[in-house]
Image (cartoon, rainbow, N blue to C red):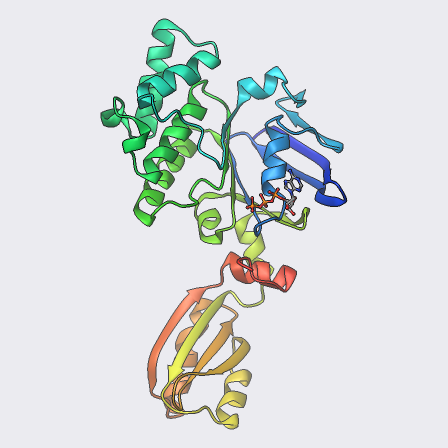
Length: 318
Ligand SMILES: Nc1ncnc2c1ncn2[C@@H]1O[C@H](COP(=O)(O)OP(=O)(O)OP(=O)(O)O)[C@@H](O)[C@H]1O
């Protein structure tokens, strides 16, 4: 069992009359990746601001590696690397010069500084572009340089606030490759996002935040097990679905939920929630025997989006 690296206890932060963070608690174990998932305005950036000592909480506390986090605390500076939402790079300096500057801020000099620069450039796969200015980089490369800057002092915990916002899919994958390599090296990560598929891919623990409160704090598997339906089957038919067909489907073994929406012309789309993915084949067989000729069908595992909807009654992207 890994040791607790970070412990966040009953954090509260109010702006005027708005409680942006309202009693948030969670823990991060050494080497763990925790996904902080929530819609825009949920309070994620405010939590990150408090974690890195930039904002003082109104109540609650944060303990990092046994030391209490307070604005300006040495423990924070030493153990945490932050990749903020807004890029923090000097456009007039080359990547190398940017990293020298960030390293110097952490007290690195001479050979040690040069070694760290070489290491982090390798970690983010930018060694061949080190002499170029970030102005010539793609959005994704700038993000990776930002990650490199946050890694200069070799922190145990890297906090990334929505690192893929405004980044194209290919660059997003390059960022994931970098983060997965850091996970393999044993770094702990906190990753905020409102993209559930990103959190599902990276996180081994998920904290769902909405309106400043924690709605769920558990493993992805445990979150999934909250939903009765573990898989979804969508079947598009060219013809309308009669009541007897819908009743038969609802009664079919493994069918948890069913909705039927009109497509163009006479066709309909059946969205069928299934207890497990293996129920899809018998249900398709039953539809075939009932005379249905699907135009198209698809199966999917239920996603965090469905879980968020089940927890809040709202979509994550609202
Ligand atoms: N400096 C501030 N002054 C007043 N209200 C603020 C301030 N910063 C954030 N808020 C409010 O606090 C709430 C939480 O904002 P926060 O930025 O932490 O959310 P978020 O989950 O990070 O969202 P986003 O992904 O949009 O950044 C929002 O209602 C926001 O409008």
